[in-house]
Length: 206
Image (cartoon, rainbow, N blue to C red):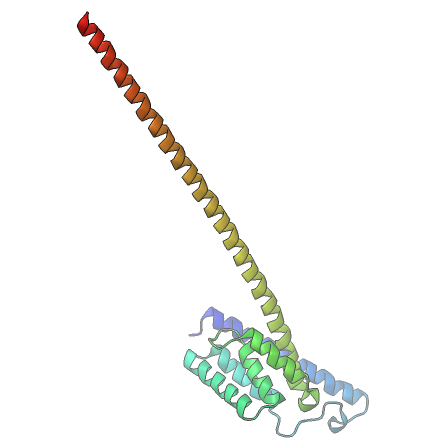
């Protein structure tokens, strides 16, 4: 039974899918209203390019899969990007790296790959551009959040170290003061004992 985290990730992937189809649908609707056929649109189909379902099925499997499945999906996408580099394989690997919840997730690398893929829009379908844009926005927000969290942790660590140092210095001061008072007490006791000895000697002579 999938845990809450997997369900949440699955919902995010579904939302991305809906947005991707919405953006693709808007482009097709604009073409129709302007009297253009799909073949005449500004974003013609790319021969051999994966359709949106191919990406979305893989992302769903990645989000809900076990670690072995996730590692296999990443390895396949990584190998494809290295063997046949291009916008579509870059996009695929970027989407895998942008999906949270698995060991190979890497927002910074995903950001770079998705930007590179979007730099060649003529080699991507409308659905691919929509998926790349949505996930790029997502990882950029995640990177900002991670940076802020790291800054707060470092700030908290510095404050904790400063406080710890202040406490250590205070303890050292207190210990030094205790040693001084102990020496003074020892001196006072020695003087008192000497006075007592003198007084006893006087009484004995009398």
